[in-house]
Length: 581
Image 1 (cartoon, rainbow, N blue to C red):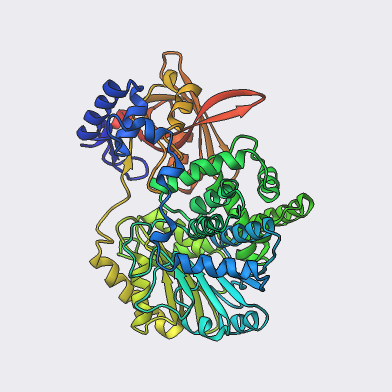
Image 2: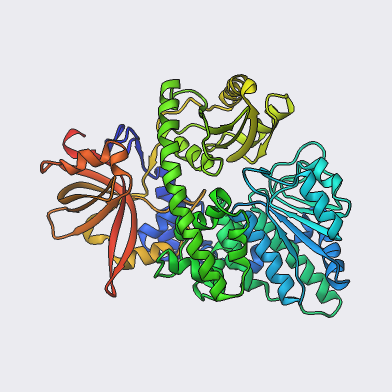
């Protein structure tokens, strides 16, 4: 049943409530565990049963952390890593240029530093070298090192790994092929011979598990390894930035990692938080939207290794310098992204936004922003999206998928069929390289493959509502209580509430396309709300010119701190005219 009878909001979405089963489960939680009803409803939607709420609200990492040895090749990988450390062999780290790769590299560099060792960091240039190991780089590293650790990459790099000429250990999470490279060890929960129980881990979590195993092997020899709990800030950053589902052990890793980050002990993250003007205790949102994009900016349009260097440094002055430069690059990245997004959206609209695949390709589109633009197209259409930038005859592209549609496997199959130069990824994201001649046939075939998975059959994504609130009930205490069920992110969305029949008392356009409003229910309750990107669609114009009309409003609550005071703010996502319902 449509929530508040809204079948088509201002953004064209149907509002969907918790459902009878969730309501029954919530009532049982209230009775069994004596928790407030709004929190009980959130827990019920998460699938938490009565009597299990205490363990969920206070997850213990020790009980949730999987045995590293449950992953194939893990013991071999850790043993070879330790052998290199003990023998003072030369170690190189080949990492991807995104947050997950940079965090993975920083984990290893930090661990080695605490053991009195060093490693060479190598991150390929996105434009000149592309994603993953390449033959020239691996040959050069192999000539000067005894061990190469490939992190967040390498699972499909057969030829480059074979060309290394030294031992290679791969620590990755991208979808594996039918055969693996001839590395000494390939630790990857998404190998085809794994059971998939840990498929949701990002690469940094895989690296963390390898360090857990290394510490265990050291303990067996009577040696104490570095304190790994202090490394969880990096694991949390990578997990959120790589949009890994915040369920099970991922949720525990991020929850604990946020506590570590709040202690402000890692110079790189301190400098980054300061430059991003993060003045409160970090939440998952800040990792995904404030810190992650800045770390990524170096790999997207600047020096590829800048983000990893920032995360790995123990020098506050160097951290400040790197953070300032990354902040500048992130501003440049946003400008480039906005230009590409406008062209890509226009092209996709001309092609049709109701197909199983939304795609766009253009000359000179920066490879560093095509993934972000693909995300924007996906969000706007509720369809898998691919965006490709061409330089000469070859284009490099990135894709983002929607729930229930495995884009990575489809891209990998396209490459196997010879319709791509190369391609791979995981369910929700993938990268590809394609020639101009391949472009149209490849996109047609990909659209066909995605349609068989059900893509294209849905309209705008439903807006899931967790309950109704009135402004007077939206207190800082309520928001703090709801945060206990977090952190929120991928596969664990933050609670969203509807405020029915509200009068807008203030509306002002802020910045280029954002909207700030204040609304009330006429009974003394009043809340301010911010809607980012409101004027990119129908929300901004409709609410700005409200003419005294009442609206149902929906969004997520947050605490806004200003001048030492806390007040609740609604991050507005959707609205519907109350008089027309």
